[in-house]
Image (tube, rainbow, N blue to C red):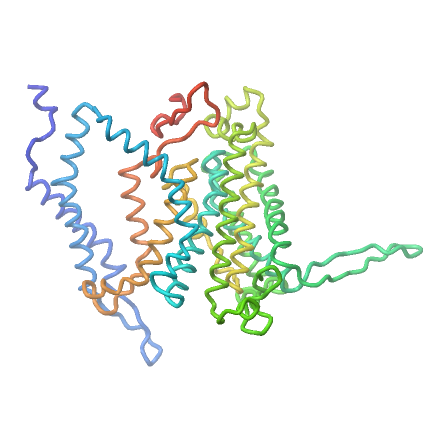
Length: 481
């Protein structure tokens, strides 16, 4: 009798599924009633008027209740049967998975290299401008940011919620130096005192300011690393969060330098080896005998950020095999054991913070060069949350997982801007972009339930004996490998 009681149900329980769906729908109705059911708008008399959106509210509640009914009726019994039966994976399935894991990265790399050409061939120059810039360049910026934060969070195990601060430092460093020049102070001997003269050099080029912005961000990473050397877990997260907010408030209030909320405009764009992408006679199109089009600058920026992202990945993979990379992973697994092995945890944390900050600063400088305008609104806490979510959802320590998560999250957000077909379901005034964070949170919950260790839940060991073997994410925790 006991064995029969522990067996999973062979037939789905429709009544139980309906009860669960009704309860979930009731909870969703209570949550969404003040958030979605009512909307305050401003009329012509500058008065706030309360409007209702019952169609949108009931449509969302019906969708949520339907998904809960499907989960209780089909998915949950299937998962129970899957857990109960012994796992005997066919050799063919294992071979296909191994082949897919082996060839996914080369095929993905080949696709991103030819992506602009594919977009041009499919939709033409006018349509490709949006697909290359909004999807290609934007996603690659976040891929680079995710790989930079992956060093701090995924490899070293240091939870950093203020990573957007380094992104902002790099962006503002490039914007100020590219527009106003690089200041220097020289010392002039003058009896009986020394006099200081201020020399203002002209604006510098993008390729010169790119590493300078990264180094300045790395310097701020060191400044953040020193106070948090003794902190771990929640305390470290709170301090890094505060650091990100401090940088944002400095950008807002230091009006004489950053122009406050107004931001910095007319930031110089990068050129093609000194040839600007303008419509003049000295522009890129005229120099090579082409018809002027903004697509040339977009394609150039795409390959620049692709090269920077690949350089970030190559440096990270190389460092993982060096002693500093293995020290990061040891620090992530157990800091006490790391100390007992004689590893200098101070230097290990500082190198992780500074290197991750440098990558974020370089991504920020490219962002400023691409946009031509920056303001503190581009560097809020939500940006840090999105980057941290990419690292966690992709699989901490996994380069491919972070890239896939960036494509899904950033690309999915951009695709929502064009989903006008949803207006037929939720009403003509439905704007999909207003609910992107709602769907973003739903996607996080679904992924965490299905893949709690991230999309890529395996790690390749940095050092192996005789044979390289992948380690399952479920085993990579303290005391389990």
